[in-house]
Length: 290
Image (cartoon, rainbow, N blue to C red):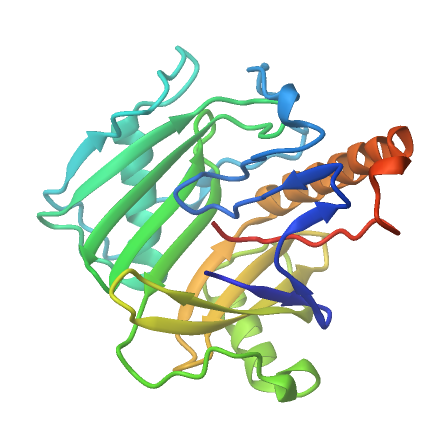
């Protein structure tokens, strides 16, 4: 189980009395966000994908210097939806993802299989997306999400675990003394151009811990980077060895913020409609993992 603390508050589940129970998964195998139960679960009809005027195309990055396409295979997940005529192919999306995995983590995809899943736009997921995942071994896998129409990078992740005596509890010292990770986040964001413009601030976000089926584990810390033109990126590093693990890009974060606002409105509305079912003041906590 992955837990997070944000601004010192433990976030483990969404619960508002008995009115609503909602789980949001942050770009794991369940995609950008999944509302499992609760007030807005009936709003998941497929809707047209719309974009702000400032949307960027991931292909603006170009092919990374030194990158050579390798002989990897592309496989469609059994449960995937069918893309529309406007969407790029699974193969094109997989190649964009492979390029970014090489750019950020130096991943050699030769001989690997990328499993691709198409997720249409819905009321709780405003972008049509391709998600790809590739497994190296039980302690290492990667996954990524790109916009299915523009190819814009949404998220890129490394899941890595160690069979070591890693402290997976919250490091309280890091709540106020996280300068090492502030510097790491700034350096990483600038090196890989994870936000456009100049990095002007880095803020502590959360701590977490993960464990795989074999019992290997990792502990992490998430930092929020912001640029002078308003873009932001969420970067996660291992607390075990300071290794760069993941990035959520600006578009993903903006969509997540809008969904959070919608959830908050719906939860408050339901609480007002059925106050007799509440055992006290509404408590809103969020699990950002599946």
